[in-house]
Image (cartoon, rainbow, N blue to C red; front, top):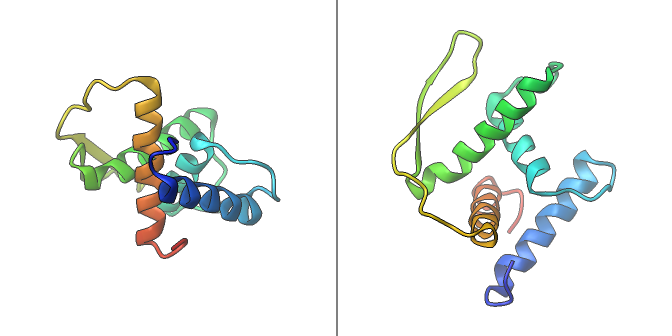
Length: 119
């Protein structure tokens, strides 16, 4: 998060605090944890136990979902087990690590703003 966008920084911290209180018993959350929650939400199988490989797939669903409005991914189909699949529609631009992190945080904040979870 850069100091150039104080609103994004404030919303990101608010999002982390709210998610930590609701899903992590107040323990600090990170980008990966938030992406996992988005993937879980989008899959809609909230009470199922997942294998280790499933956890990586849930994070992938989270990434595709939050970057879809930016034109990088497009929802393609649900498979027979109900897992969403996405198609890469535009390659991600070459970004430095900090720029990648900023893009994902912005996309996550936008996702939760649209869901009405934060304002």
